[in-house]
Structure formats: C-alpha cells, structure tokens
Length: 223
Length: 119
Image (cartoon, rainbow over the protein chains, first blue to last red):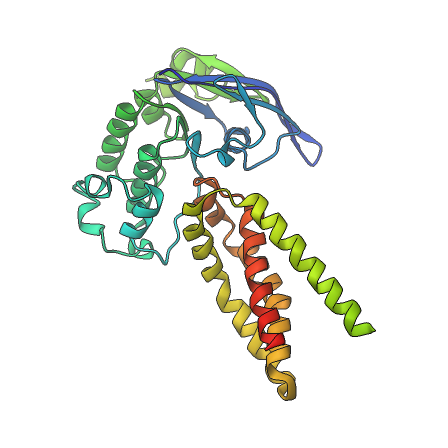
C-alpha cells in the first residue's frame, strides 16, 4: 500500500525571526527525500513539526488524507531520529530492542555483524557510532509508515554509513523516508528526491548545480 | 474544620489526576515504558523525601510522604527537563507524550505519598 504524508502552510518563528514560511512537502512510500540546508536554515525544526514534538505557528499535517496535530501520538505512523542520542543509557541493547519492537523479531534484529556482539551491552557502553547505528536500525524496523532521520550519518564510521545506506534503501520499499545531513554526498547518494531549505522555503533540487545556484555549495565543490 | 477542608482538596486533586491519567494512557503495553520513566525519577523523589523527613524527625513519614510527592516530583521532573530532555524522544517514538509521562509520575508519587501520610 502506498502511503502519503503531506505537510503544508508551515510557519515558524523564533524571537520574531521567521525560520520557516509557507513550506509544502510531500513524501510517499518509496521516497527517500534528502533535505539539505545551511546551519540554522530550519531543517530540524521542520522535522520536529512534522513529527509533532514541536508546535508550528501554523502547520497542516496530513497522512493518508487524515489531519494530525501530533502524528507521533498515533502508533505506527511516524518515527523520528533526533540529532542527539535518545536511547536510555541504563537499559541494555536487548531490553531496548525488545521494548521498541514489542518483542517481535528480536533475534532477527540481532542477526547483524555489529549488533550481534553488543546484545547484552548497556547503551551507555556503546560508542557514539554504534549507538547511532542501533537507533537508526530500530526506527527503520518499527512498523511506522514514515521515518524522519536528522543527521543519521553524524559520527558514524564510513563502513557503517554504507550499511546504513543499504538499510535505508531496503526499508524505503515499505516506508517513506525523509533525511537530512550535512554530509551532502551521502545524502545525494542514498536519496531519490532532493530539496533544499533556503530562506524559509523549500527549493526542489535536481543536481549539484542547483545546490550551487542556491548557495549551498561553492563552484569549487563541483570538481 | 481546616483538616476536613485539606482532605477535601486532597481528594479532589487525586480524582483529577486519576481522570487525567486514565484519559491519556491508551494501551496496556505502554505501562512498561511509563514504569521505566517513573523509575528514572524515583531517586530524586526518595532523596528529597528523606532529606525533608529528617528535618521533621518527630513526624518522619508524614514529612517524607509530603515531600516525596510534592518537592520530590517537581525536582525530579525539573532535572529531567533540564538535563535529559532528549530522552523524551525515546517515549515519543512509542507514542507516549510528555504530559502522559509527567501525569503518570505525579499520580504514582501522590498515591505513595498519601499512603505514607495516612499509614
């Protein structure tokens, strides 16, 4: 089944400064939307509004034709990877996975070269990269129709980034995914649609030349 | 007269808390997550209860119970808000709101505190 997520008429200001103005974004099952933008452009704010953990000054969120104020309150709709680690440090990896997957498919989840050996470890004992890998794999394996990933590749070793990109591509067959990261090469590599948050709005991006046009990259970056 | 008034207020507060919590706890499987959150706030509540209880040693359990559900709850939730705010996403991703977490924690502390005072 093809699911549709739409967010429209998003307005958000901080201390009188308009961050987002009249944003429209649509994501469907199969989409991997790579969202780029400079620091402070409002990418994370937009994802939080979309998830429902932050209120917009105005926002209209629709999933499969139904309007939601806070989509995260409805199980199975949407999951979100924040910039900072969110797993509870005192729980073990196995406890965390069991809770998040409601005990279903836990053994299959740990049939993984990296996580298999960390099954009994506490979250606090994991490195930043291992923790990030676990968070992303957990969110992708939850039964959510849409996944929002805020800086998924931050602090992750290149070999694990490749595994994450494969995982993201595989799960896009059943989910819609929106991701944002400053590592634009990996974003351009894994995404099948691109956009740029620029001056409070969203610009559609087709190639790297568009990123130069909207001053996200310099001409030298194209070499 | 004053005691009756205080008990009436206490009772009303308890009823409101129970009603609000029941309205915001939709599923049985979320209780485990609520319990995990509650346990993570317990240390501050107990420390607060013991500290203020020790100051009123002649009525230790009354002071402990009262400070456990009042100051203890406020301090532990404030600590969460200041230093562990990102952990709320652990619960958000399972459909649990901050309001639900705070109410369930306050309600549990309130019941335990009142039981300690009454007993």
